[in-house]
Amino acid sequence: MSKPLCATAQALVTTLWAFAALGAPPGAGLLDAAAAQLRGGLGGLRPPELATAVWALATLRHHPGEAFLDAAAADARGRLPAFTPQARRRDFLDRVGLGFGRLNLCLV
Image (cartoon, rainbow, N blue to C red; front, top):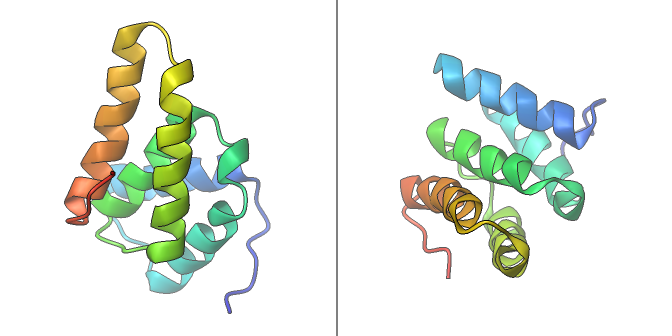
């Protein structure tokens, strides 16, 4: 079991995004710890943060585990009906779908 990171979920997502944007994976230990901590609080993330977390982990070529992916997919599916306008819904689905696609997984 990884030691919990001393950061908010939003800070973890931003950190994952930065590593992914730079193309500089920080190592499996930090990625595993971040995914484990985020898994417990996915419902508290705003939709763009959820999409960014999935995208960043996929861009870093890190498989966060089935529990994280199942929770992220369920959360994403549950939020889609509430999105307006249509373009925002498409953007969210595109980002989450891209992340799952990079891991060779299906969102549905």
